[in-house]
Image (tube, rainbow, N blue to C red; front, side, top):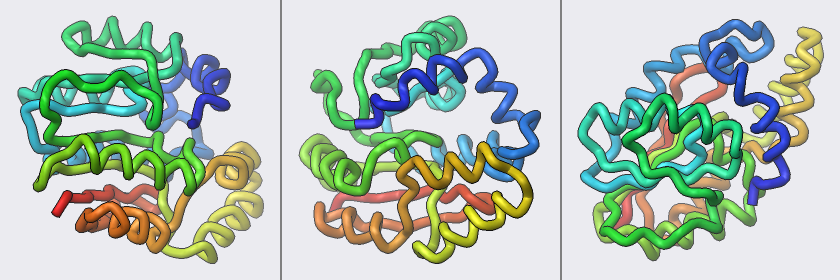
Length: 213
């Protein structure tokens, strides 16, 4: 359910905001146009009530609240959560993950996330999208920004390029975590009656907008 990466999240919490600002050369292209990517997620989000998975240090959360959304945050990392609660005290953040989370007590119009869905295997992604289909009414949206590849071959080439560039951390990350390709995510969304589009934002990251039919 992505919880096998909690130690990684806890260790990354104190330097995460520096990484997304481009200070880590290996991940500079992954986080290119970071602010614009988060803004795009917010632009596609319907409200008023939003579930955000993987709140992290609260960067997307803050933008959603500033836009007038009521955010129900879900975050498994205690260290990330400490930073988010300071940055966005108005958010209601609960312990949980993409699959195991408290049942929302209000109607939810959108389910959002940034840089986190890849912590689930494709089988777990299928399970998660199925759950979200039962939460969202017709017209409700899933809006996820994450590293996604056009094909499995594209992913292999990205790993090879990282190795050739001596970006060993990035190469390991792309190899170990569960980055999906667009056809796989399209098939999962179609299975649960979502109409889906993908919008590329940098070399690695796409925004996926899935609307329930």
